[in-house]
Image 1 (cartoon, rainbow, N blue to C red):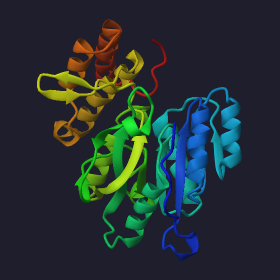
Image 2: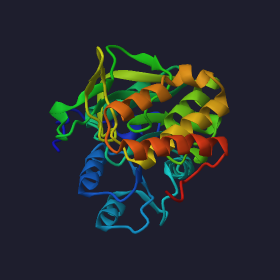
Image 3: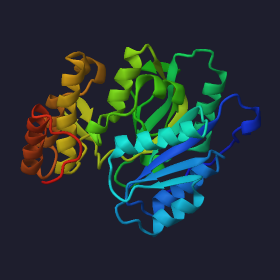
Image 4: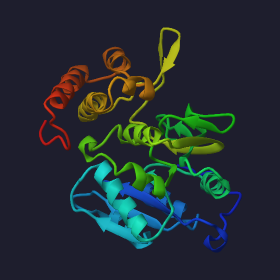
Length: 303
């Protein structure tokens, strides 16, 4: 996978009013993850790595070497709890902002520079998250063939954004409370977005600041006159998405649907008409809803 050329450098920490770090959550990282994080280190951001890998591999060892702080959990404690662990470490080290990353996110250095510059120039204490534009990889895994998911022509306020690639104020993180561990994975970003807005905070997307992300095994399809992107995720991931949507509706009420713009209808259309392994996914879809009704949350222990 080729990276975009970096054409600028980030100001040294001595002349910035805020302190910044990057936070990545790991789970069985591959060699591409090592390359991604070595590239991020070129931004001069200190790196906090929280590793959920049960049996660390050689890539975990390489990432430990380049990290400023490496937290090995020895088990998969979930994304929400791992993010909480990393943010608490960042607060302990007196950082003001954290760039949260998935292990497979590709972030050009110019994008990091633009997010930090926006934070440095901000006169609005209500800006909780500064986020990039998002482009998704297609099957060939090449940046030049990515497709836009969330873009803007000028800075715009968003309801919620992907955690990965976003610059989050740790003051606001402390204000709204930690990530909800009951979610384990999926919809963590929607939950934190709802909490920020309930407290009067803002999430601002920056133009010309792309990140490149693997969104499941997404592929472009046509549904009537619309272009859609079925995720082709595993049945287990389908379970978490269905369960956590139901849980968040119970948590926030019906306003969740309008706020998030996600729906069971869209999800079912993609599974039934486009995806493989339909029956297993449908079984896990309905199991997720039933478990949410029973308040069986956290990690799915058996399939």
